[in-house]
Image 1 (tube, helix red, strand yellow):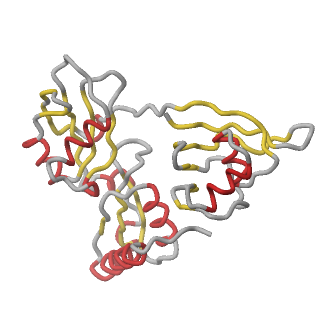
Image 2 (cartoon, one colour; image 1 turned 180 degrees about the vertical axis):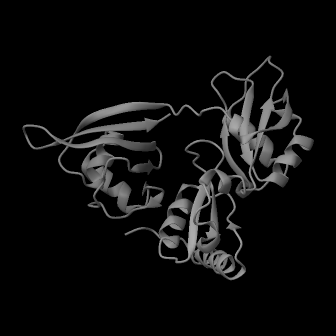
Image 3 (cartoon, rainbow, N blue to C red; image 1 turned 60 degrees about the horizontal axis):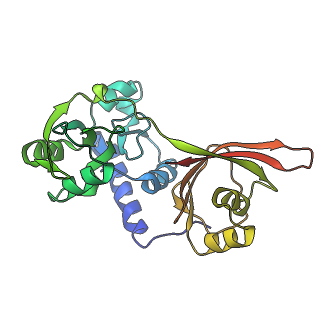
Length: 261
């Protein structure tokens, strides 16, 4: 059973209002930047809506934080995704340092939030390894403000400029490989392998609300996991199921898990 937060009702109400407005006014409507859990909830909610076309976009390829666009189907059913992406209020900002030091994702995030920018106006942040620059996707107003106001990141003098979203670099996702076998495709088995804990401890973590599946908290220990699923385990990190299902001679499932670094 997925855990329902008290703010979810308001979130769904807001989505419903965007859908109604798009249909009645025949115009596109957009959310703010959504995190993984919100994107999952939005996808489930909007799948039951009629007469609208749903597109999500975050600037970066495979962005973790994205804006969802709701388009009246009568008008935009034949419009290409590239054209629709151009209607999103997303700008890309390149933050360049002095060249004498490097900074981290946390440094960039902290410096931007310290200026009073709300997280919902900001998409993904990408800082290449050992780099003195960073790339951020933001709403248009927030991006313009950052370019005028951000002078330092981690005590390093920086300059900001708007670049084309198409010029954003490819994000290299790094991970460590965990391989082994599990008795079944149940969540508790997968959590035990991912964390190197016993199944009993894995069950306790799940029932305590410490595990999310595809960004949604999950309390059932026997829910079935599939290849491609994303797990978040509090205190251990994030994991992606890369391979699951091939049986050994003893009937166990060969499993490969990628732990995000």
